[in-house]
Image (cartoon, rainbow, N blue to C red; front, side):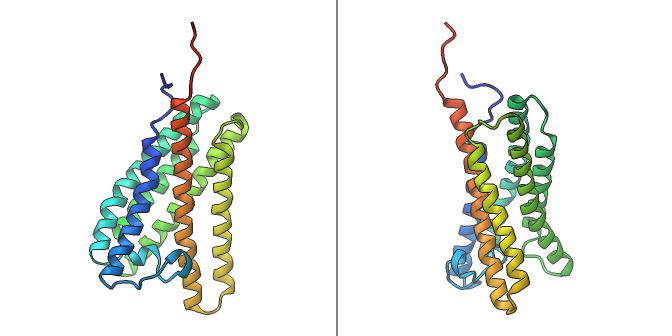
Length: 224
């Protein structure tokens, strides 16, 4: 029987798949309805995630999927806190706090996406920035705890790889903003990196889903 400390794998799996579905479905609907041009945003950078989900049916679908996804992500980080505490013997308050704050700002971002006015634009901008930043910091808090007390965990190396990838994209975004003079080209670079960062977040939650599934289903020696 799986230990109670291991949360269900479906939780991080949904945290991975719902945002992925929301972004791509909103993009497809916005292309279909003529709100954004048809392209591969990961390569072309023709539109941001926000722009793809800002108008029409795409906006509605994005909110319907992303708001529950934010709630699931808050629950995920709370469960991750207990999981780490069970394996390391120490509470992981920072993991839960950073993750829940990030999820709250995702709610803020999704709620005001499509609204007009400078205040709403600021709320959207800070919402997505704090969401990405808070999620990355929550991941770093997980890695810090694992490196001190649980370095042999199967998920440790994959999560390190994800963290390096996310950090690399963050550095690339800063470099592109500082060095690309043409505003259109700069926007395209930032759009590409935003979509790619979304993939790294998906990968992070998938690693947790794999780790929790593996831990709950690994063979256990009989005590008899």
